[in-house]
Image (tube, rainbow, N blue to C red):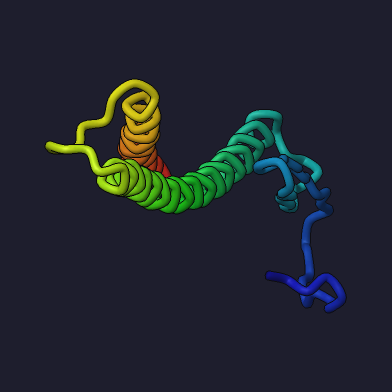
Length: 146
């Protein structure tokens, strides 16, 4: 990255103007692209230059979106682990309570316990599906960023 405090050692033979394109990338990032342009530049050349700057800005936004999606995937994988731990711990708790009360036979959740375990399993399944969606999105985004 060019340090703006250093003097650039550039000599122009043609009078030039600079063109800047400023874009917002994500909620907290912005990007400003600057290039020189001869004053006798044709509108067609100017449009081509602006198209190139906009294309570069779009690519940077895609890279930022990819980075954000990877972070979402990492968080969802952590959520999946926690959901599985919660479901397992709750099932063991219910079984332990069943055995502590001295009931005969095999434990099988009923009523409220069954609903609680079904809700926890739904959380697991939602995380699994979200992870699949995020991985598919990342694969597509990686191809777009090449």
